[in-house]
Image 1 (cartoon, chains in turn orange, green):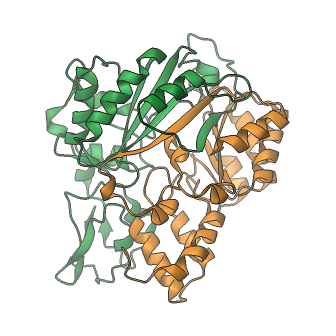
Image 2 (image 1 turned 90 degrees about the horizontal axis):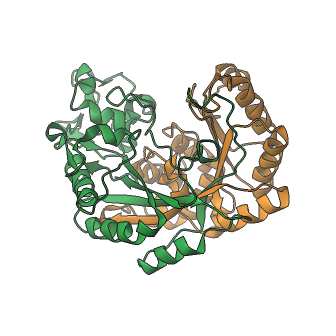
Image 3 (image 1 turned 90 degrees about the vertical axis):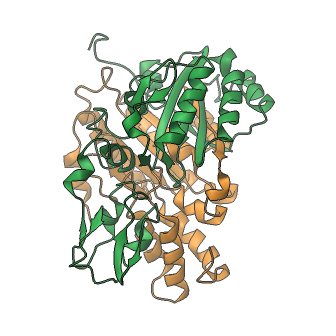
Length: 215
Length: 245
């Protein structure tokens, strides 16, 4: 999950892309944390995440997994990864988690200026920031930036650039819709923070510009 | 990962799923380039081979190849290191653990990210450069720590040098005044590796999510810049276990 700060795209697009993580700390608040985490996840469900995974199940919201299965899987130490596709929703999620005061660490990745505004309005006093200083080394080996907007939505890098290209090709050939293509791209991401709503917007914008054999 | 040649029908469905681009055609059937494969298991998890030709052989879990699996498959647990996930703590629970203090800064070098992957030979170039500059203390709970043979030189276990991983994260913690030196070392070694890495710097913030201006000035002076998006620890955690647990 270290990588969520490196999500690429325009500021306009990142306005609709906020990751939220719940992390218990072994040796500090891990023991007996299961019920607290479960209550936090219930609150997240009520605020409408674009995607979510509990690490105990590793099945994203579009896999057919039911909320009760996710909640049932939560035990002491379960880590939860989610993504929201609007400022209003992430703000509501933070408000609910603050009010619930379950004592488990909460991380949010997104535009710093927006999160600064939001936390000030909610009376939350953030503790730490993790800044991205970009990509270094043989950057000539990277896929182009428009493809990285998709691939960097998966922190572990298992959404392949070739799969993005394949999905764009299928959309152009009208074999699938951009939403179906987004769900295909979300599937490899085992951490559940691939945002299919943002992905759909990006595919809608990109597909007309691509020729099937580009890159 | 291997593809059972007697079963493969050559449909190519699995090819685009491979982040390493390791799956191609050989004699009309799909074939995995074993050197390029990171053993991330993505093809097996999601490509839905119509004839179940994708197979993860037992050798994937044998050392040293197992390093590929444990560093590249997000669903695996580190049998080599005993740590789950990529094993980094960075800023995730610092509001509870206070691991990185106010006069310190954390740095994470995310080797191989995004998506390109990195050979252990290149990772060793980085660990050696850090060691040569006097930075020997790679986070001990970080999985990559177990791959280091000699902390003083930064040498990795020699049998690992031929392996490749999709990502491995080198995590460090230093006093803030040493950040300019560390950034310079990282910039120099970036010219020596045959792959990419992402660079993270994490620190406690001042009231109102104010990023310490002194640290930003150091980053700026190093000729680096920061992205407008970042990861924020919201400060909502608290400890309830005894400190000796």
